[in-house]
Structure formats: C-alpha cells, structure tokens
Length: 350
Image (cartoon, rainbow, N blue to C red; front, side, top):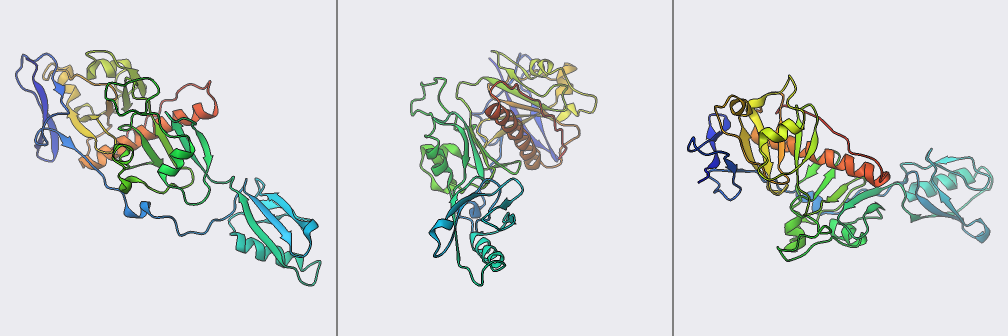
C-alpha cells in the first residue's frame, strides 16, 4: 500500500514527513485533511468590486467627435495620435493625452479664441482605443478588447462569447475551460479571483471590475503538464507522464543551477484561488534519505535560491511568477500565432 506524503509544522518551516520506508513513491494527496496539507487562500480587496471613480482620460487611439457649435461643417472625428495630439482645422496639434473630454473641450475653446472672438466647442468620446484588456484561452472569441467604460469580468467574458465549459465531470473535451486554473493578472500580480465560484456558483463576490491591461486567461481542461520554475537551468512546462516524479520533472528541465536551495522545493497543486502546497527536501531525495514524490498534471514545481521566510509570501511569489510566465507566452502567441514559448526564470526568496 502506498503511503501518503504529509506536511507538518516544524519550527518556522514545513517538512514532508514520509511514512513507511517501504513506500516506493509517496504522493501529495490533495484529499488529506487540513492537519496534513497546507492550503492558502487570499481574499479579494472589496474595492475591486466597485467601479472606478476616476474620470476617463484620453490616450493614443481614442476617437473623439469635435464640433464648433453653430457650424455643422466643422463636425469632425479625430483620432488621438501616438504622440497624444489631435489636429482640428487651423489649430496646431493639441496635446490631449491625459485630459478628460471636459478638459479637452476647454483646451479647444482656448485655442480657438486665437482665430475667433468666442467659440463654443462640443467634444465627446466616440470610441476607446487606448485601453484594452486581454481575454485569451478557451473563449468563443478570444482576443484583445477595448475597455469601454466600467466593465466587470463577467461582462468582458460575455463580450468574448463566453467560456467553453461543461457541468459534466466526465466531459473533458479539448475546448473546455479549466476554471480552477483560470486567472486574472493585473500589473504583474495574480488577483485572487475564484473562477469556479463565479461561473459555476454565480458568486458575485468574485465579479471584479477590470482595469486597462488586465490579462484574463482560461486554460484548457485537458492540459497535462508540470510547470518547473525558479532556480533551474530551463524553466518550462514539462509534458506530464504517468508516474512522473519530482526527480524526473527537474531532470527534464536540465536540473538545478548552482544558486538553488534544494531543501525548500515547493509543489503547488489545485486551484490558483485556493492552492495546496508541499515543501520537499529535494537534496534528501537525491541522497536516498527521502523517497521521491509523485506529481500530478498541472502541478507547479518551484526551486528557490534561498530558504523562504513566510510560507504565504513564498506561495504568492510562486503564483505571480507562474501567471506571469503563462501570460507572457499566451500574449506572444495572441500577437504572433507562430511564435514559440519563452522561459521566465525568476528565483526570488521570501
């Protein structure tokens, strides 16, 4: 009978406690009770569920309608150029980048008084081209979408045609989205959105408002890879094979680099919103002092370059590195479908 590898608190760190020495390959069993596994869960900032109170400001790519009141022939559609300027009639290029439509109106009227005694100008926003969100992965219409006004995650996904998902646990077709591994990345950071609660349970406490440059990704449920990252020679997604272990996964990534800290290798499993974590003494495994560990599809294996100080910060750093890597690769492929993957190796100690 296989023994289950367990986690226990030991001083300020966490160590795997192997059972019977005859167990060939202990497993990280996600079904264990909270006494033998470590789960971390981050809560959403309540402010993310409220629309922004900041006024919209113009940027390159935005289109505005401009008209001198009383002169229908002056009506024009102007696109903010890469330099942030627009050109209207005899006026020189006006820098409107960072201005609201009200401020832009005042600027037009001020500049118009150089040619006429008084001028009343109408300025309105026609379309947004300066603010976008990335909606990629298993969506009906994945792509880069203009962020028009205050848009929630559900509204944005609906704009992309919705996700490919099923209520049947036996349905694992290629087109289905894996809600447990889906994520929103903002400013390089993973937001703690629980996609399963939002899409399967209609839990509106997870329906955040999106901001410009947010990256939303829905991976396929059929993906079977182990993600190896950190202080390894090649950070990469290793195709999962039955009975894959931490030793074989790290070997497939070229092994560890000299600056690695192999006694605190992390395995992160399960939902990104509520990950379960195990800390492995890889050095002891190589010396035969501990047994190898079986991995599961979609596990994240992270090798640090020094011991972690706080488990939650360590896990956060791993998840941020993971979603940053996935977002970079998927973003490149969205722009150039023929592009390959890149490895992002960011060993950071916490």
